[in-house]
Image 1: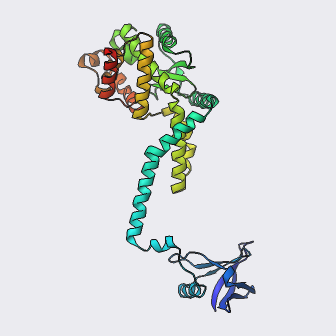
Image 2: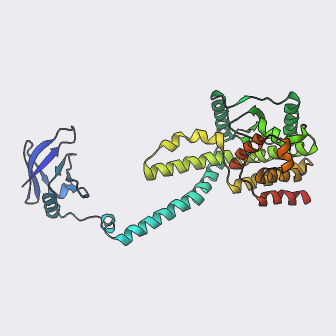
Image 3: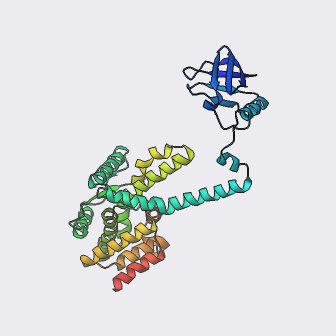
Length: 348
């Protein structure tokens, strides 16, 4: 016999009893008198420093605090640790499991989630894109991020005219130009076809010229065509689907669901992968060609933003404009290869 604590499974009240094992049965004597067959009793897997717990078929349970009594009780009931528990006793098996877990997480993150996100986005109806985009715009306006543009009416009209020129009829898009300090010099495409371009993006392109000439128009048209590519290829929806899957994976591994609540904010700061950027570039190249616009000015703009302005440009344009261009670099990873691809397209 040993001292145990009995819980009936219906209340939190603890009953002290004397527990004994004999004749294929467990006997409880004391505040509660009960008898259970050993074959109907389940022993919880033990952990160092924790009580031995017995689960009975009627939902009740007993806890034995004394370690030695717990070991004797488990032996009397014929308890045998599961294979998983036995493997944890071997260092090599723990290391192997850790390596497999890391490999599984990496494969899931870099291959499984992107593949699944693309399939999910392809199956979602356009109404989902509209809902996501409208929610993002409403949230940005409610937070005061989108402020009225400070550009002249002439510049606004010219940029909108460029949008109408390059936008294909099969892709419903609209352009919003705002004074958006949080974006810096940037343009963002939302899933519903809303493209938000900041004043700083226009000013960065216009630069020292102070007017939208042929080169500036081609650069702005290239930026818009690139963002239209993100819309047409549903990159925003794919990113949100991937973020949702990644949050679910994180929650399943670590039990932290805080990332799920932050998912709506993903839309306000989309950061595309190199693959998505390349896809949007290819779409933009085809769209610009269709409209008779060279891709060479866009390549010049990308290189200027990636490597910084020439000394002459620094003297003519305020330094804060170039600092603001870093936001475009962070959300649209550029590379010499991408600019070279645009130059090749111009040559072709």
